[in-house]
Image (cartoon, rainbow over all chains, first blue to last red; front, side, top):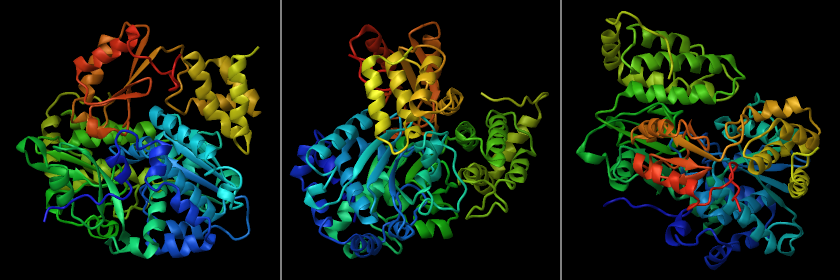
Length: 440
Length: 164
């Protein structure tokens, strides 16, 4: 039987394309009912019996258990803060952008419920600065929610107070890292901080802070509606529920698809996204954003299961961005462009990332433009092992945040799957009289 | 001497009041300055610094980290073209080359190459003052940009606020 989407988080925005972002539509489709219910419960009940029981794992990229993250907040230390990560910047991920533009109230309801559950009285929603329309709609939604008493003092007569602040980013990928986001929220360069202390212990303004992704927040009201245990029945193993996958590249129907975890890459790419366009064959695909090591057509029957993809395929589902490339693609060119991205976005705090990404970009530029040297691939692996000691998944790191090891994902993938092709390109390049080290 | 208009000075104070600590208002205040002036001027840096009780050098240090803030003169239209991989395989780099050449002499249009804009289902993608336009060709992009130039489309401010 053909696979279909399982629309939970995306149901409203798909069904009501004309006005899914308005308060009227949200209220007409059961909006804020779960908030009413949540306010009659004990915070610890929401944490344990709902969110923890649902098995929900963060939808930003790392896939850490949401309920578990909340439970790390030290007892008795206040104020606590909730920071919501809508700084979507991982190349080819476009799900949070859609959720912010087209269902902002769903995010807000999740935020108020979550803030109540973790006993926070201020929540910040950090939105990528380039999402001008999304910010406009989210700010309108927050204003409407204040006016209706879903945010503010004594919410719906419960005695619970919450302020929600929409905070606009200004163009920095690294602000999407959870500690980078906190630095940015404090008015600084978005430089990540060393952990421990984890944000749950010392986060925003050195107070206990939970950082959750926009899609994670959007899922919370549905967990209450379905019940945590019922939600956990969806999905596979420890990857419960649904996720929105952003499929792009050489596919016939690029787009966001919300599916139950556990279906295969083939079902997602071929059945939902229409497969490789123009009758061509797939050469390779990237399963979880620019930071994820690549996969080959032989891996298409693997399940969308965070643990399986990590342990068996040595990569990750990451942010849920799936990029598909056809048979005519030059893999070195894709690797170069991804490294150009990392070199541009490295915050500069840690030497291995700042210098490593820059050198990898230069070497990949010459390889991808026919000027490579035969020893280039091994040279990249050699100095790459100072960023990722051992070069084995799961990647270890010599940098403060996970961006350092991410810079090596494409290079390791070239070595795993395209070594011969790269060496051939480099041998052809070696015949050239001069080999400038340059960059576009 | 104030770089904010009296109205925006009030807005600036409101923004500062949203946060438990004033320094958190640096990014939104810089956006406000850019929305008003079309760039972040040295005078605006000084005023923002005074509002959040920092040194101007600290605010400049933060400001220069973020690509959206333009510090080299007033901009009318900022055209941001994505060339990251999903756009790369759909003609993004060619679109960027074409537009940057076509508008190289135009004082009112700044064409910049940017990283993934999170709209890859409509690749290749570009923005004009942070308003999205997808499935672009050289021709359709030029038509769109000309509509902004002629006033047929109302451009947002450079930081995304709607112009009157």
